Length: 376
Ligand code: HEM
Image (cartoon, rainbow, N blue to C red; front, side, top):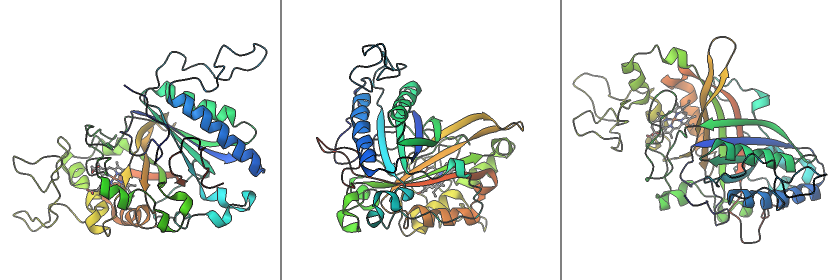
């Protein structure tokens, strides 16, 4: 398959059909020099463009440079194809503090996320000045990209936290089958998709008129590391599991279309009432609480990944969903939706949010542009 173009109106890695693997990294900027930061962004852009084309991070590569110097590429992707690698950058609220003279350019939409009921956030897995999302169909390619960007950034940035993910938990294009999350449910059925052109303009891409001209054609990313208590989940009845999502586990079809011809992409009919007195989709079902009908029409482009980071020393898998969602304005999208979910979602018994971050992802790059050039 062909490499994904690095430049364009929008950054790659947002509506790009979700690849299978993720390495997400959040950096703290350690230099206090704005000039050094801009130099790094220029260097990163060159390396990122090369790596997304399947080339080494630096022109001299892993083995063709002077032998008395460390190589310009770490080497573990030698011989591997581009694997649809995309690298997507975002800037966190803390980058807009006093250090770099950017305070006046902080987008109003780049709010500090409020504390939500049930949050159990770890500082060491939250926040960060700059994030880079690396997605690829080969984990070695995604890890190679992040490793080389961190290497190039030595002295100017330090890794704050990073997260590996597998088995994309969302489809972002109608050409993709819907994958499953670690609860075993199809995830991404009602997602915003690359083909929804007018919805993407309304719900995904920031506009020049939104108040932050440098973000026009960019998007805001919310990242949440959500631990899943899968051992508890696995002792829960199928009936209960399906009630939580309001969907059938097998087909992913809404439970409101229980007849023989029910299908995954049928719409919910929340008013439908069974013979009994109960609505088919309970008030505390995840999909009902997250549905645009109950959130002023707000939608998200979800692009998350499953993770299993070994076990936790207490006999449980350290597993969950690394939730990534792109949107035009978190104040109108992620925040109100998560406020709904955090309060009453029946799923809450089985999940815990342990990491959180928000980033402003600038527009795509022009022919000679570098990452962040509309901001600096
Ligand atoms: C839908 C799982 C967290 C927002 C769904 C669906 C599943 C699911 C299985 C139904 C299929 C689909 O339409 O994609 C999960 C799991 C989560 C999680 C396992 C955490 C571990 C979140 C969070 C948000 C969110 C934190 C946002 C704050 C949505 C939205 C929908 C959805 C907007 C589509 C609702 C609709 O329009 O029908 N989720 N979700 N989810 N979820 Fe989640």
